[in-house]
Image (spheres, rainbow, N blue to C red):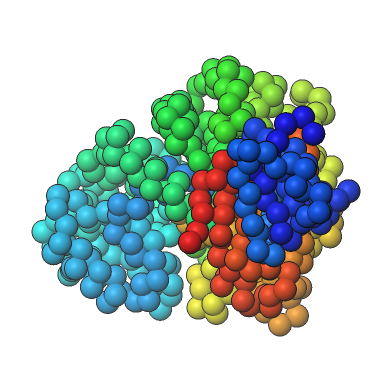
Length: 536
């Protein structure tokens, strides 16, 4: 023993995720790393005058939980918005709007979280529905997935788009009604930004305050790391400020967000920033692109038409040539590439881009990632293995498609369901997976994600069961997620030399029925040997 532990956890059931020592009872932390792990009767050798001893009370300890698909700043901003999650019908949305308008200051009403099932009966999204609740203030509400917005008449007038507008992108649309006026439905970012640019922005200090609130919330959920899915130099600066003040209470992997038409040289500049960012709590060695949108708004790119009688295939955000060039450039600079691809057509185009980069640059351990993979053609499964690509998937998203009236289910159609959210089939085919939430799109609680991994029913009778085991679900948020971020030699398991990131739970997940897993709570969260949350 080189020196006493500054923290010692003992009397716990530690599932280490280390195949050489899968179970332990005690763990010693020196500095920010695990120094020793073993039996209770050996632990006292690590106790010194300044050692804090934590009694695990026989509870389950796991490696710190890593969310491989996250939007930290976007999620933090939602903490100050009108929440529409769980609104069951239009009347409830209108009631929440009226109540918010009666108590809120300022001009704009901004909210998020409404579900497409509000319109499952066939009535289209329309501004008049919002006008009926708030006719005299601008209202802007984004759907739970962030791919569609709903604006009232005042908001559309403020933005100057009541009579429509060219978004500059075939991927995005201001929807017009038969009267030639905007209905209030805005599809994808370019259309939404026509309104967003008129909404007063939060100051940097206001955003830092919201980030601190978010970090406190996430620590209570046992999250010790995230792979962010949007980023730029300004956002990197925000996290650096938190880091410098000792307030960045989880590890952040931040990519550069790319969009069509961006100067490729920005990738080179980001690669230099990434090399200069050396703190283990903040890294930046990746870029993020969108290949398509979502099934619910028919902006996901499919190989065959949507199941609604139309000939629509969705839309690609990039021409294959431009996409291949960006991926190849990022790959050549040693950056990891994250690509939003939901439709089977988008997944194929993304894999084509990864293959083009390998052909041009040569094979390397790139671990480029396809984010979401809600639909995949079986002929493309083997290409994941061949290219070393990772499927980064979000378990709670699968629940969005289970309701028989759900828009995803209806538009994707039965022929695609056998390969919808295909965790089990991908895993059995040798594809590497990583799990996350996509917060604020879905609940960031990883225990809820694990619960869905174990309990999700098939999409229909005769459709393959896509559930994974508890060991696999835990791995999806620990070892698999660490591997997906090139961090598997320091994170994802509890072993000597690894970072001391861990979570202590109120109940043993391995002793609970699957249905009861969401009842478990986090008792303690540790990041780099620092206790960032401790329950009562």
